[in-house]
Length: 181
Image 1: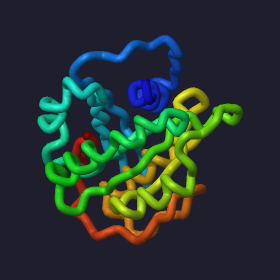
Image 2 (image 1 turned 45 degrees about the horizontal axis):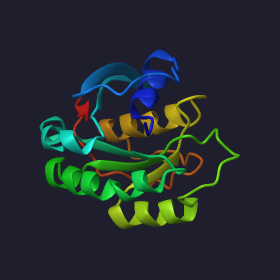
Image 3 (image 1 turned 60 degrees about the vertical axis):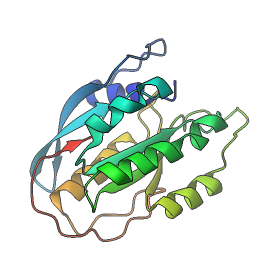
Image 4 (image 1 turned 120 degrees about the vertical axis):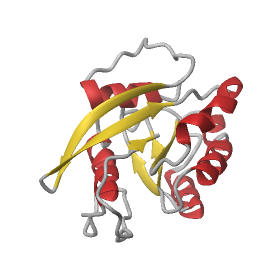
């Protein structure tokens, strides 16, 4: 219940279902993104977060170009459990993959945060990831996060700074359409 499925649903279909249930296994959604006049098909893999599914997650992340680590800032455990996913992604993704630490639920202002923004930004730096805040409910930050992914996959060097993103020039990559897993 971190919001991975809802993030993908909001981005791909512009829908938000607060009662959506977690699906066993992994699901894939696709969306075509146009950046700098070039279209790219994003394959967005929604992998299960439950510990009992960890053995199958590696199947979906092998040779991925992008890894997005989502946590809920109001549930500390979701942040602390990222270490396994980070280690798994770094062991199985492409060598120069893009990593994004994604804080969901940016639309919620009235709850007691368990993970500070400063702590998340430091962690993102530590694991070599970009940091972003999104809301699966309102869609805030989603377009910018996936635009960053598209720009990275297309090897675009000049990427504009977006809100909380601290973006550096990317390594030149061949033009291709690969899965985001």
